Image 1 (cartoon, one colour):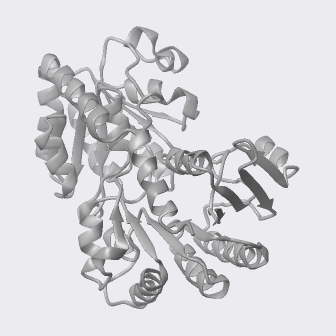
Image 2 (cartoon, rainbow, N blue to C red):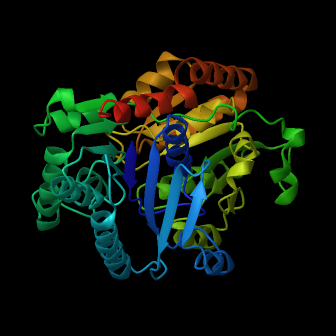
Length: 409
């Protein structure tokens, strides 16, 4: 079975949940599928030297030759939103052309970043007359409305809804990451039999507890092992409510030895740095994205791991970083919209949930963990147990393989 993949980003690019795609592709190959992948030259989260190196790599063969990786030239991704949007469109055109020219395809598999990939899949499905499986990790344009970048009923919203409807109508199967996602798209007319719910997972062997005395990040960045740490790892963008987090950090700075460590990159990171400098906030440390091989050190660094967003942004999502926090035996400290995340955290006693934007409840949750270390550690142990029972890599990837194999002739 030959599968066409057209990702917007691919290794060695860095993203918080890139391991999911890696795991899925490997599982497909191990199940006997042949993958043809076309991606632009890497740009996100890499150095100029790495980008120059990959300009020489037009074709690679992975997983015993079951995955062929074709890279095409494309200018680097910057912070200018217009140039970024143009880059998406140029990549779309290049991948459409590559997809048209690829022979003997049995199935098209695409993910939802960026959302126009769904149109790409729908059009190629019509032309190639093969099934199209869509992995829905982000609901567009709902996510734009949540961030304030689009207004419901506005022009951008209407364009987004056209893209969304076209994608759902033409996908043969839609894999969604939560029951909330399923309810959302069913309300938009998607038949239930077309939808498969597969929660994002964590590689439980790759993400596990690292004792503080063995955690190399403390030495690498001069962190005091005696402090109590709240960590955030992922995109530092407009939706993550970093303003609220910094307000809480400032209020706790003088009365406790609680420290906050933010690990990642994003459009709002520069502003976070400016606020820290302007307000002289001394208990917040910013670190860059760390290599995937150090992921256990990343999620073991804190006494608790943070999942946070502005109100209205996370109504339908459970961020995949949640599972990494739990897999490292750390409690989840959530300040998030009330959805399945609340049910999971409360039902499995693996953290503390507070409503998105509720600063006082969020601050009190931090203090509760700080003042009761035994409870904090027990919540972490509960989280690891939940992962091992429900959200391992083997269970998650097999569900993807089952969807793909259901189209095998």
